[in-house]
Picture 1 (cartoon, rainbow, N blue to C red):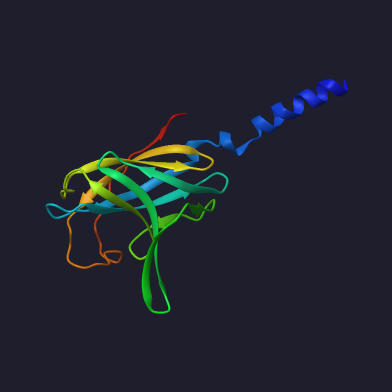
Picture 2: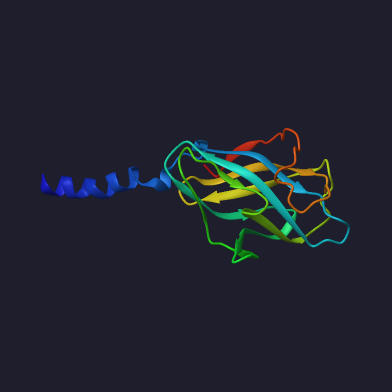
Length: 165
């Protein structure tokens, strides 16, 4: 009997593991990027992640429109704006993670072509627990100001698709 109990412990640990979190607990909405001028090699993605399951974290991003996509955070420290790459962005159940101007965002480096208003492209977000989720990013017009966070950009159409599960 003791052997049976000891043999069951690893199985229970695997079945109860958060590595099996359901990617449908993650919803991505309002995924958008700014149009870029011809020759630009960098771009940005903003979006909102809502988690209806256990707490998770966004750990990686990828898109075919750029050689590299990285999670960054902008913040002001002692009156000086700073931007730096981060390893992960935490997501609390019921508290959306907003990637927006002036905060967390996805930096695109080595754009393969300009991002044109009206176009769209996929981005794959990888979460520590839920795995990979792919969303569609809408490219919006460049606008005029640096901080478009308060501008009404209209409703965005976003498709969220769990991948790899």
